[in-house]
Image (cartoon, rainbow, N blue to C red):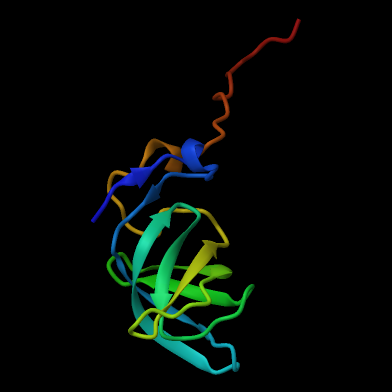
Length: 129
């Protein structure tokens, strides 16, 4: 199931994990026909995933991702398409989550999946000179 790559090494926003997670995607294909398909992730990070689908999609198309294991869902956008189908006629697609999060249900996500900006806690009864 795979290793991780660091975001610094590849200019990524968060660590990518090569992991197969069963998800359900819902959207409209290149012809505008609605579909629902059970797929597995190939690579995930807190900003999205790479999957393989039987449906031909278009750049910018909205796709709903549902993770049946944890009951969570999130909207995403197609940001990359592989023009060459695999031998089983599936096409690789990259989906970017509209809201970065751990929809994947990974129990111990990499440190860079946590909130990047942390504010100092407010100071009670602070006196201004």
